[in-house]
Image 1 (cartoon, one colour):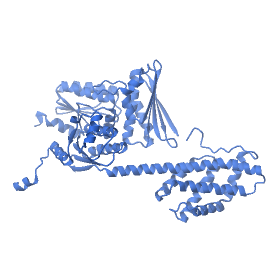
Image 2 (cartoon, rainbow over the protein chains, first blue to last red):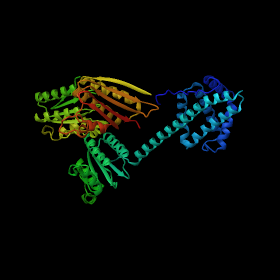
Image 3 (cartoon, rainbow over the protein chains, first blue to last red):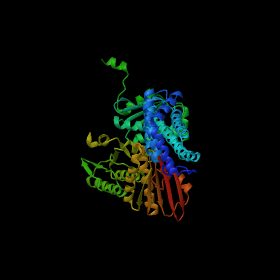
Image 4 (cartoon, rainbow over the protein chains, first blue to last red):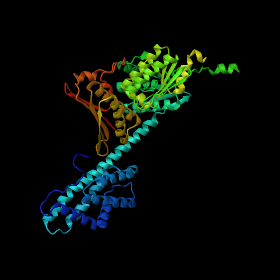
Length: 298
Length: 120
Length: 133
């Protein structure tokens, strides 16, 4: 958070001192808890928010949210509410709940409580104003806290999903003993490139690979950033004792590499994947025997 | 901190510890060069599996080490560079050019044994 | 919430301390092992520059967790002679033949952000940050 403390400061209003107003309002909200919470739940259903959840689930979460809301108002601090917002988000995000729904229901709660405060008897207009002065900024802080907590959790989930997809979409294949093949397909962005490199290096160590064939047949072009990454991958692989053979280099990519200063004569490249595998096998000392020769020998 | 140096036949094997200081690296270099001369070793394996940081100084010192050992007629292999370290070195542009690297001790010994006339 | 640690840097053994403290500070931030390696190596380079070119200085480690965008900031400060031409220092790469130089472009590649403030005769402050994902 920012340099201000996580406290809900009541605005100074006319009439009763704000600390007292806050206590009064919390007492009112506690007293009418059941009725207000049920009214809120009804309004959630009427607004057609949170349709992914059943009425029973909504009622259960409504109770927790209500209680946490009152807690936050009373204690003046938002930490407990932040923690609750995160754990609530973890529960409901997999159900497909969206940001506008979460913000929507907290706003509804804010409105239900505000209306209840306005409609109850305060004795004087000034006292009502004092109570609202205490309530409004605090309630708004709470809405923001819950919304931000939800959004952060959502972003974290999306990032995790993207990582998982990236990892799945490019397997490192062990084809033979000590030989790894990394076929790259599709669009390469710096993030994916970095993940691939890490996966490959771990794979080299785990499989004790001595040769790696990186096949770029499925990649149309790459920017200089990603091209630099390819070079980095070749160099890092060598540090792990593995030689890299690059196959399927399109003329465009070859040009990009030259443009960033790569000496292509220093990089082992072969036209296609099959040729690359044969070259790799030669490196490893396998003799490549055409199948009809074998038949003839027996 | 002393880096343990083991003798295996005509090879010397140095097993580097984590938290190696600049001075430890220089001491290691000098100790290995001295021993290669003394034992007439034909190969040196430096196992950096436990090394948590390989920065420009470490890279430079290891390169110098390999050169000095070559002058004494022996070969050097550096083994055990961790994937994260290899990645970092490549990012920093430290290639250990001219220095042989292998995956682990087993590979290092295999490499030294390859063109070692004594082993065939 | 921010956690700050300051490591005085004067001798080369302080470089090892700075690396270790850097790893300790960065670990709770959920960095991958590769990112940890990048961070500790950057710290090693910056600390060595202080020892080599300024004689003494300090490394401030600032980890922000929860609330603020999570990440680690490393501030390498010294009252040394300063860098005559920062732009030049940022352009010169490591020469693979082994001349060390300041290696600032290298450190820049290891981290996400870098800022260099240096006044001749007064000192240098280098601030680098890596964000956790």
